[in-house]
Image (cartoon, rainbow, N blue to C red; front, side, top):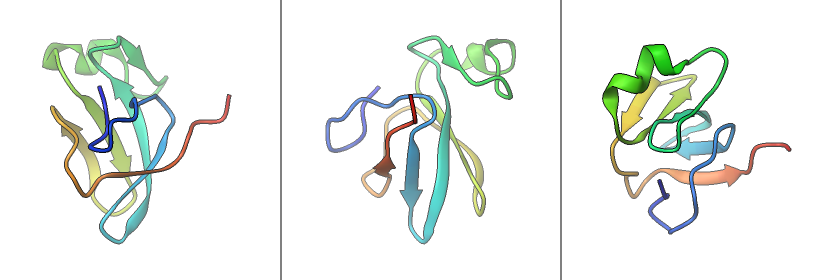
Length: 77
């Protein structure tokens, strides 16, 4: 999966949408990468896309990243 600007989506990336800059990528379904809190058992049925948890908007599943979703910082390694 990729952001609208072409960069790869990775688990733990910090992202922003609108006024909410506190989003965190919690799973990348196509890559088979899931956080401890958001497991394959919960979200694997979706088959495509990734999910982001925002303080304001809650959990959002994206099949394709929307233009307004922006990468703020990569996950710490």
